[in-house]
Length: 429
Image 1 (cartoon, rainbow, N blue to C red):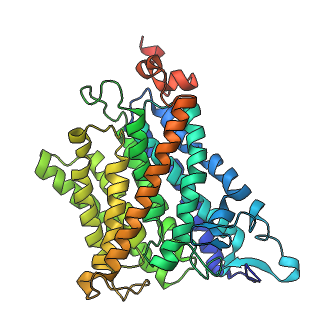
Image 2 (image 1 turned 180 degrees about the vertical axis):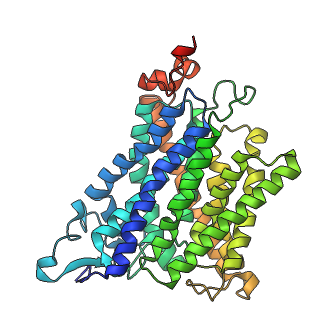
């Protein structure tokens, strides 16, 4: 009988309830992180774009999304639509056979935990089109993207054999690339899509000539701190148990974020003469992004190496948008895409057989076998995400338009799209 039925483990279930809450926290934390980065006249719109990913994804997830990701596999490409539509067979007492389980936790809890991954993935894309996208167009895009891009890629990466079905997606089952918590499905997927969407919608008016500085750096730092907190659930929760693997993964998550922040600040000091609070927050997030796929594959020292590489490379990568003239407003490409690639490929370099994934990378005597598998996963997810996102964006642009009115952009997209403003300054007049 699939899923298996029985009595959930109390300790594992308690931990996963906490992990689920931590993962759900990450989307509001991202709203705060992104909201502080934009100008004061755009903060509400940015936070709305992030927060609306929660209901969009949940409705899709409950009705058919979970089934397409974790249902019976079809050729390694997609799950079966009817396996768990409406979350059937995932709750109740299983006709007297006990609680439906994934591992040792209730299956319905696994459903909720995985939904949090999809929510924050959709929200990440919003940062690349800050200040200039119509809210209605965003809702349509986010819904379509979650179905056509996220669901297939999540099946490729997350539907491991034995976890939910006898066979899983092609990346995890056939290619045997390692992506423990979503470096490809979450970070590379959203980052590549964000780049395409930013290119199609065009640059902000006045960019890069006009300064468009973050309006509230304390928001940015607080958002980064909450993301770091939530990331322990994101990564360690993916072990689906309160055990030694989860403990090591939590330690690696802490180490990579810390090392990346230091590396980013060092690069800033060398290149620009000042370590900044904005850089510290961005560095933390870059390290967390990079350790997401690799947290089960590296030692604590390896996690430091992953963090240093991500912080230094991403710090330099965010400047490419000025050279190549693409307006990635909040550095989704420079941080999430680049660090996602770094973390995924670093498994092939510093992966250790002593870690839970049990695979040696090049520097541990494993040769290039795991490295080429990681590279294929990166290229495949990037190509698919970019192609489908381009088709979606062009279609929406031609039907209703992607971009907000010129006057809305000039006056403030908060007022133009939502008839609100974040701050009431009338008393100063």
